[in-house]
Image 1 (cartoon, one colour):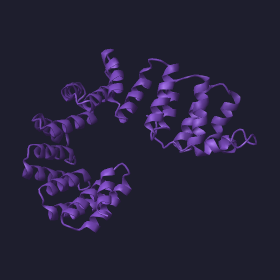
Image 2 (tube, helix red, strand yellow):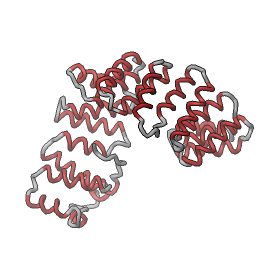
Image 3 (tube, helix red, strand yellow):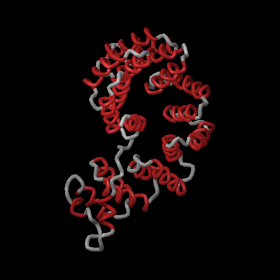
Image 4 (cartoon, rainbow, N blue to C red):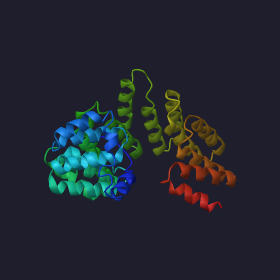
Length: 329
């Protein structure tokens, strides 16, 4: 799996437009360890695409993004290879539309490539283009694609389209054939909990039994969500408390408990819970958001506004926090 990086390519483009004084702006850098060995091999075999890929990946791992892009594009120009396309795609993780366009362009040269289409489906799902993602995953599932991670992606695409029953069936089958696949188990448990499905009870019991060290907060957390869905609020609070006791740093349990106490108008208790959350997760935007909601409910509008702004400052996608702060001006 390739490392994920922000596409900081300004240096490359500025240098590329700066004239012909230095055709390779990274020449001196690539003459130094740890790149020198690769550079010497490339000089001896300048049409060996795998050498550019090897050096490009090393640059990528060392956050030398602009230089890595040059090498990876050179490798692709010599010999199109899905690995090269995926490595270039990793440079665009922060811009899903551009990432999707890159993968679609790559597929024009390597049509029907499973790995590239898999990556494209993941990107489309991030863009909430679930129909397009399902067109890809459904095709490969029909062809017999059985990789657990791919089946999980297909189920998530179904869930995004509100085809929940179908999604659940795929997840249950995946859990049956791959019980050790932890991520699938956790997602299935969450879906059970959110839908109030009693199957969550048996599944979390299995998770507790598998936790020999008794350090896994998730079974209790999922039961907290389940009891909340069932409006059994005292049992929900108790389950969240158990999750916190199991792992004092499990921020999600504090947030869910705080939100539930807020909904019950127990604002002082909620703030006490959220204060504990801030002690273990001072950079968690949701904690500031729920703190602000409680303060606003108690009439402390200025403190609430400041905490809404803190939430938005930590997570720019948290637009409801920004809107709430603006309403308190």
